[in-house]
Length: 215
Ligand SMILES: *[C@@H]1O[C@H](CO)[C@@H](O)[C@H](O)[C@H]1NC(C)=O
Image (cartoon, rainbow, N blue to C red; front, side):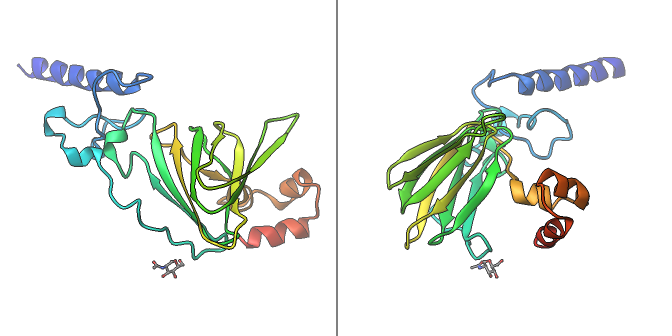
């Protein structure tokens, strides 16, 4: 009896693992069960019979983010963490607020392409291609313009107007991730050795030290 129970438990576990490890959804939905102890690529599925409309819902993206910070911008994310119904669906959303001349500093998303729509204001946007070209591709966006930042490339947006700007972005992952270049390189914990960064940036250790102190 106990053996039957254990093997059926194992089967249930395997069933869940196979489902969530698929490239795309293999069923209508797999609402994130954030309390599950099962470690999978994403979250395990909630029992479909206990899923409710609220699992597919997020409220609050009409609210401006708090831009009182050194860069003057704020990204408000709606990923699988905020909206469990996004689990396994490969999509997420963000609201980005910019003060006049505010900057969403150079960063990349390790798991997502970003499709940005500018709703208010004027943005200077850009991304840089990989080595060896490192081509900088940039454009000024106006209200209603859409711009794509290809997956994993370093990009930024800057408000070049004297009014606030507002953008909405779609991201091609339920968990896009963000690596902000300055924070990752100059603000890692613990620090990357100063001499390594001085050589990489072809500058003095004093310059690197001053920059690290800001992060
Ligand atoms: C916005 O962020 C700043 C800096 O962290 C903080 O001092 C301030 O209280 C925040 N404002 C609101 C309305 O949350």
